[in-house]
Image 1 (cartoon, helix red, strand yellow):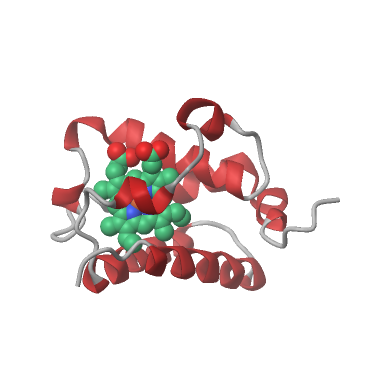
Image 2: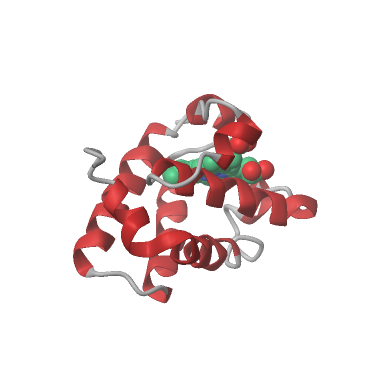
Length: 127
Ligand code: HEM
């Protein structure tokens, strides 16, 4: 048994739930005034796959992300993007909307949001 509490999310949501969550997040990105310009418009499907595979890996599923991208080094990979507190809060807002669209228990939703909020704060790299 895994001891990482986040791994219950993969067990409960499955690949389909995580795929649906990431799709619900990404469909809002192009029209977003803060995040839209930051994401590569010609590569949105690939970007969506990267976030999906990262979450599947991090929540306890197959390691496809690691095989394709190596160690996540997420803070470093986000350095080219100017992430201030507004961008951080918007990312969380879109992910909160996405969580509203999938079937998830209140307890799992809380766990997932706490994970996202923590990591999103860690990604802030501009004042
Ligand atoms: C704080 C606000 C955030 C902003 C503005 C942001 C923005 C971006 C942008 C513009 C990209 C490039 C898209 C691509 O080509 O893949 C990206 C990639 C990525 N982001 Fe974020 N992100 C944020 C937070 C997060 C969080 C909280 C996570 C994890 C839960 C995350 C996970 C990823 C991953 C896995 C990639 C792909 C990395 C790679 O393999 O190249 N991001 N992000």
